[in-house]
Length: 117
Length: 110
Image 1 (cartoon, each protein chain N blue to C red):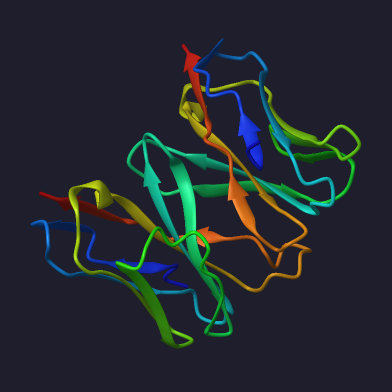
Image 2 (spheres, rainbow over the protein chains, first blue to last red):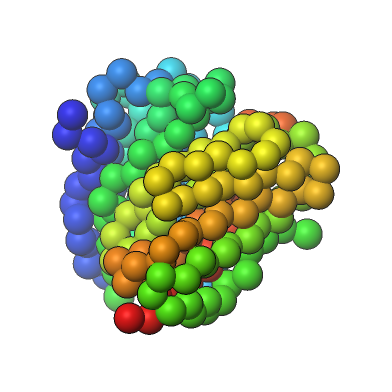
């Protein structure tokens, strides 16, 4: 299996621009997670989906952030408008499910390094 | 109080020694516990998961879970320079929420 695929790997944009990050989970995985990692705050869960339905978006910092999962093989995280404080590495992860017994093990994509100038 | 807490380190051990990494969590009902390793500039990768009290061994790695004291630890035996990385503890709590600790930086000195 190809693992979790994220694009782009690097994104540099200017403040105020819209940014869209993309993720393809591992085939057969039913849960998908978006994380943000910074030196100051570590790894933070932004939102996760189960069977394409958003389950918990309490980590989404504000209305500028939105995420969608239109089907089982694709998800997007959008920031509009972007701000310099959004600069971070954004990871997507997927798991078989949420039921324990190893099914809730998350596998991470390579991440997207976002820089907002 | 944070959901998951780790000593940020850095922790330095000589090659061949045992490295001990610790993690505490706040939700007593949490059921799933994970250790991830993250090399600089890379994504986290799973080392092992543990669900039951006691020890779980996988090669040079041993995870220890004590639900009564709400801690989970990772022991790395015969530490190698290639083990130098940041180790992240993760917990799924009773609300099915997934929390990572801030990580412990480990350096194995040749």
